[in-house]
Image (cartoon, rainbow, N blue to C red; front, side):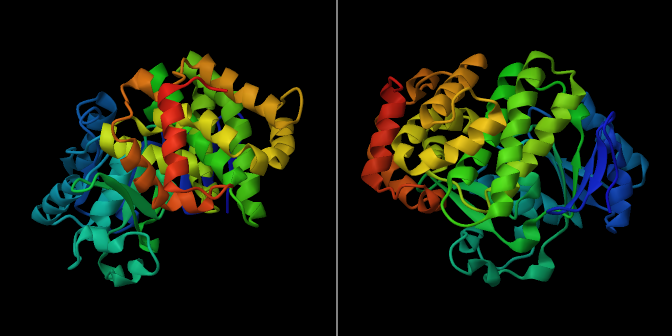
Length: 393
């Protein structure tokens, strides 16, 4: 059952989980906790958010409702196993019965991993998304999660996995269990309106890369394809508006929805953009969305022959003049330049020192398996080198 109002952009959906969409709806957190039977939720956020008024207000509302909530904010921009371990310790010490993830993808991924691990006997890495590893978990021990994204990028709020860096070998591993999918998601544009323009762009382009790679991934999945196309249409229209005016709540709402759509669409698969971005982020600690945005054109050129026939429908959705690869490629370049995205990874401090490692780690990263063109470690190393050194084609 759903309801919507085209003026206020308020809606209740149940796909792929329960989503409450609309301005100010993060104030419903306390009621949702009661509905889920939570009395002692752990509020997981990041250091940049924990002292902001919107976070303080939400926590105060929860406490005023009689909930014994505590904050955990020891989360890195690229969350690590140590972050999860610390969160699990805090969760156990506080005898928390659920987790609220409030933040960008890093906070949400950490929140979901804490909920998974709080009462497991095995180590976190035993639940890497390989084969049926997820069956090793004690499913009934996984705590319920409420997710409130404060950026419109990763779509982690509608995902059944967390991307966590294993510090020992600088690998970003995908930790998966079906019960990691949050029980409820709140898409409230009010909590994104103070996001700076540069982060609005970087996170929004992360969502775009999810939709683009899902659209281009091989395989038969018309549902994911349709979601990916509409996600890119929404981003093309809403991201420039949200970038120019952070108080445009309609654009902010569309971007939150598009981010959730990107993460839903990439159930079909991703590709070399993410296979490169994951090890680059793990080694160089770069912003994930910005890294994706920089790498995207280089991967487009590598995949050119395999994705050319996918460009005509995309061009029509984006309103691109011309429907071939070149037209869409030039549109992507112009779109990135509109937001001041650098043209090379060197521009954000990445060098070629670890090129071999990035190629090797990228080859075993799950998104590599669904790249439109089969890729080897050498291929990924070469694309990475081009993305560092430029110039773009």
